[in-house]
Length: 419
Image (cartoon, rainbow, N blue to C red; front, side, top):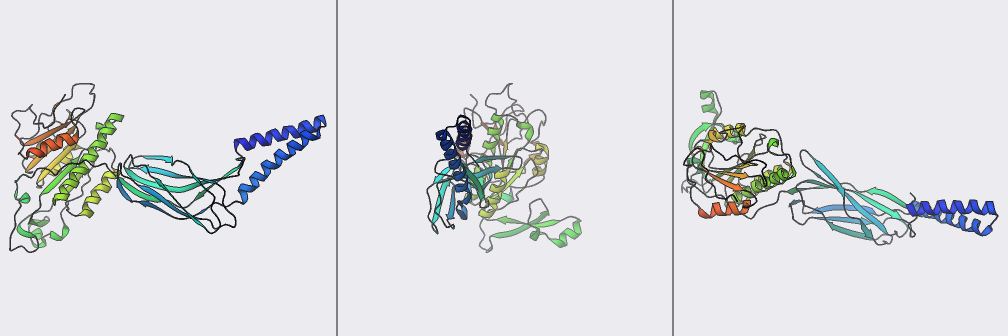
C-alpha cells in the first residue's frame, strides 16, 4: 500500500526515532514521530477514500476494421460521502485470435476530483493496429494521498468486447466473365421471385437444405437439390491459404495478414456489386454462398479470428473441383511449392474465371519456384515488394479481359511484375 516514497519516509522516520532515543535528542525524536504519523495517516486516507463506481462501459463502434477509430467510453459516478481524490485509471486490454492472445494496459488517465453524487465521463481511443477479438476491462483504479506516500488499487467494472476486422484495400470487384450457366446473368419477366428453376443436381456443401428435392433424392440414393438461375448475380468463391507450413517468420506473418485483408477486400467488393460470395480456407472452413450484409459480416468475423493452421491445399482444391460456382480467387502465401505439385489442376473448367494471387517472399533465401502446372485460363497476380496487392488487382480488373491460357507448362500469366 505504501509507495516507494512512503517506505522511504517510514524507514527514515524510524531511524530518526531510534537516533533520538540513543542520543537523547528530543528534536530528532519529534521529527521521526511526525514522519511516521504522516505515513500512517496517508495509509488511512487511501483506505477510507472510495473510488468512483463504473455505471456503464461501451465501445463505439463494436465492429471496426484495422486502423479505424474505436473509442472506449466509461460512465462513472461518485456515490460516496466525500469528494474523490485525484485518480489514475487504466484498462486491461487483450487481443485474441484462434491461436494467440496478447494483453497490455491502456495509458494511464488522470481524473480530477469528483464531488458527491456527481458523474464523470472518460473516453479514450482503443488501439486497432491488429485484428481479432478485443476485450476491454476490468478497470484498474489507483487512489493515492496528496503527498503520494500511499496508494491503493481497485478493479472496477466488467468487460466489454468488440471485433476488429481485417484492414480493407480500396479495390474494385473481380472482372465479370460469362461462363457456366451457374454464372449467367439473365432477366425473365416470368420470374417474379428473382429465381428460375432450370434443373436438378447433386447436393453440394453450402447448399440450402430447403432446396432438396426429396422425390429425386429417393430415386438416386443421394441428396438432389433444385438448381436455380439467379438473376443479376454472379458467384465468387475466395479460397484463402491458411497453411501454417507457409509461415514461421515475422515477414511471413505480415504476408499472412496481407492475404487475410486481400480476401476480405475481394469479398466486400464482390458483395457491393450484388454477387453471391463464398469464403473457403485450406483449414476446411466454408461460409457457403450469400449476398446480404449479414453473410458478409459472417465472413468478416471468421477472418478477424483466423490464424495459420494445419490444412491441405490439395484437399481444398479437390473439393472445389467437384463443384460449379462462377469465378474463383485463390490467395496463396507463396508459390505452389514442390510439395504439392499440380495442386490447382483439379479445378479444371468448373469455374468461368480463375485468378491466383501469390504473396511472394520479400527477400527469398533461394530462388522462388515459379508455378508450373496452373490450368489454362488462370490469371496469376504476383504480389511482392515491387507490386502491392492493390496495384496488381487494379491492373487486373482495369483490363476486363479474359485471362490468357498458359502457352506452356512452365509459363505464367501475371499481371504484377517481378523486380
